[in-house]
Image (tube, rainbow, N blue to C red):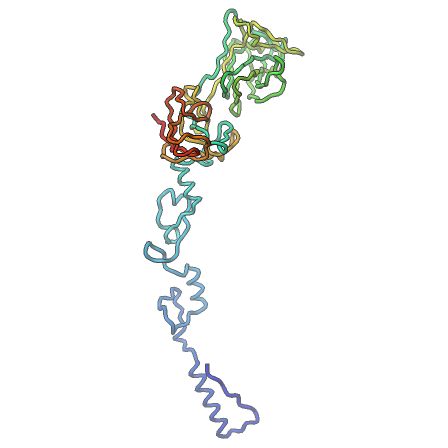
Length: 386
């Protein structure tokens, strides 16, 4: 930039002063910015070194993205895709820019096409998949009777006025899962109807312990002719193998009417007990009841090789969640995915669903192949749809 000469007040109007004034005007004229050089184009299309963009033009250019939209051959503006846009296969976003995909959206995409279910289904029971993935399936709305207790000979009713609780012993051989108990109950004479619920209790020296491991809903207005009454548990009752438990029926109103049906037990194995201040075990009777596993559609359950409808394998739960959790991570076997997190697999061996959520090289007869080991910790999942 040119230098201007200062003209002092003491300077006369002589030749030196006129020269300085003329030189100053020349310098100002040289350094001036013509209004034609001010560029108000908000796209800055001129791409010029001789134009000066206005403040407003710069702001509009920056606000608009400041660049052309990106393509496979042009560097430029992009927009993050929403989950819906990923699922729809959309290439261009709402701003007109090409879309890029966040890894979280990829996970959601896999969840929606069925390869990974995350928060898409509720755990019907407790899973420990973080320790080792557990074979699982999505409920189809069907049921399995997991244990049936029947009496023979003459059936009788024991009413709730005489006894406030009844209990049926169950000794497991293998692990036992259920979420319903169905018992034959009815009226035993006149009086008001009774309400009942059930607790599952451990054995304590041949009697129910008195501590509920699980508690069912309430069945109301038990009266009239004997009929099956269904008690439902909000979570799956999971009983350990080779262990004794008691199914305890509680009279909530204790009236001389509602009663449980029981009958003779020819085996004489001390399975039935009544309570009226203390427990009395009857070696020769047993309740008429069964426990049942009901698979709610869309809920995730452990594959159970001992049950008819529970032998399905849709995939593996790979995290540890409590019953009722909606954050279950489920990897499908239908996509041909590798499932890792196991221990002690035999490389190259074929694995089957065997037990409750577990796998082994032993075919339990269900022919539910779940995959082939590609290392000691990973399995290449196989579809078991047929």
